[in-house]
Length: 506
Image 1: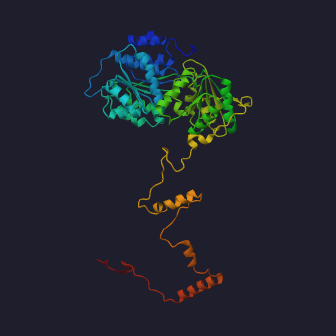
Image 2 (image 1 turned 180 degrees about the vertical axis):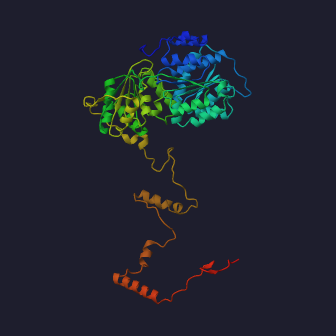
Image 3 (image 1 turned 120 degrees about the vertical axis):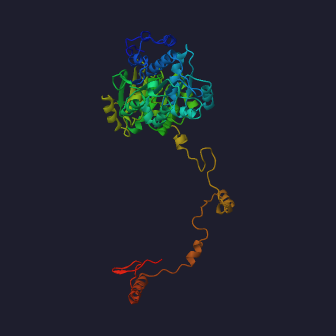
């Protein structure tokens, strides 16, 4: 790790509460990062902060230190409700909430404050019991927090600190109405410390800060949109060359730790199958992976038993995994901001990294929006022949979850054929159909009205077809008949005709 990402400001110069300072010293931190050096002096005075800095620059430590400092220096507010929490930290994803909780453990170690965690997918009763026993700081995702709040597990009427991390992601994931609901249950903005941090401060986030914060000071770390310690490079393979190219890159990297980003879950499963059958140690992280399994996969990736993590954009934010050597954008993201958050998984906290992007036929048009957003061109390496993986083993892709056919059964293996309510045709023909199946014959389902005359009898009773001359003669006879019919008088409307007034009936 380099020291170039640090400022000249020391934590010991900021007059932080001694118990928190002791935790900082034990973690080995001495100098602040730029966002910490700018935000902490303001937040430690009890003023609201709206902070922007690129990912991996220490925003989490900044708001945790400010939160703990305030709680330790002030007495808890009185509450008339059960289990009031003093501080609430809201994150958009489970992984980010878990990471904040882990980072807070070292800082809270020498205090008597208690920290709780609330996120979906697992440990519902366990998390609830912990919160019911009393916590000072609650970290979690909007859905689970609101669930517990509506049940009265904790109260927000005596809240002293509210922190929103990755606020712009709250909008992207549709959580903003939940956030506003929580704000309405809190004390007035002037009666609490409001801290908002994000990698990008959009107009939507600025409006949220203006509405629910008390004259916040905006802190921005003006830097390149992408991390300046991340080397960017792009390749231009055809769609058929993408997988061999990816495997060639991973083979050349050896045991280095890599995150491969895919746009769709189906393609992620396909990549996992290719890598597994060719002896690459990989794991797949997507949105539908159960929470406990996600945590196990991430732990394997952190401890090195798996060195390739295949991920959809669910992993683009909130994951702090040290020593990620490089990132591969197997599919270029459709949103330019996602490119920044993806490559932010490497080159964190002063380390260097490499971000590789495959500009293929499908997603090639996305590169223009990405380069416009990051305000520079990505160097392109056109010679890829030497990088392609030679003679890869092809996996059986029919076994992929997204390719499976249920053959008349639902996902749990149960039959999904509906039973006939009245034991009608299906019940009567059951034995007959089973006999036909045993004999290998194709069973046809009866269609139409069962009371209709059978087809063979309809054919017998059908009138003989007429010749064209006979049909023409019938048309002429019908015309002559119509001419000879007497003309009918016009029908008088109920309300009269023209100048004649006819009274309404009834």
